[in-house]
Length: 246
Image 1: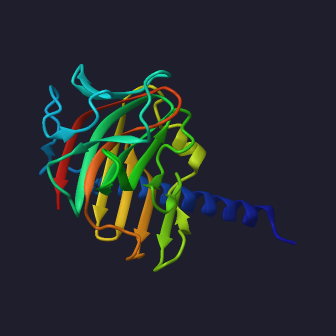
Image 2: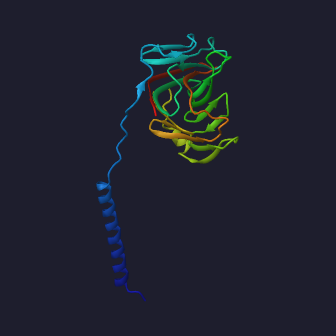
Image 3: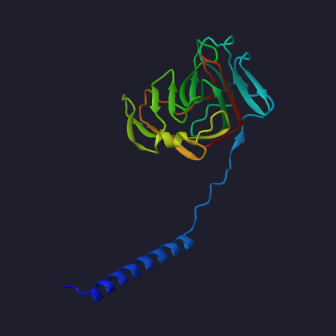
């Protein structure tokens, strides 16, 4: 029979070990170097906050108000199809794009690595940081007039040559990430495009990621734009738009 004294000694030793490990962890946490937030350098403003200089779109839907680009529709003021305000300052390849947006109503998006359709004025085709008023699609990577849904919110996707998007893994739970989105308030959007890799971040969290190896379907450079969507009334506002070419 094991004596009570022996059991008591074992318990005391185990408790002491737990205390030692906890103390070491606390000491390591105090001494471990913290990775500081990245310094924002190399960005250039591509919206002056006062005018649409450098941008082009259908004047019926676009204006500048309170330091923000505003695109708006109404029940009696609709585009023939989705229409875009297009930045004319270049066709960035590898870049980081940061801006703040506020969406009221139906649907919008930030277009990048896109082309302008030659036969439809101010229509675009290409990658889009998607967003909508009920946050069903906000945070996903979409392709306007192309392959459609590429990486839903919370997904890390891969597209092989001539293939459909396939799930690699998760960057977070979609419903949990949804809680980060501010409906009808300002949100921080950060897009990173490097080679065949695209990362989308909202309010400091990665919401979707894509590696695109479909050489026939992808683009590695292109235009930037903001979407006004055909359908129910909507209002998209964008400000503090800045670009860093890599």
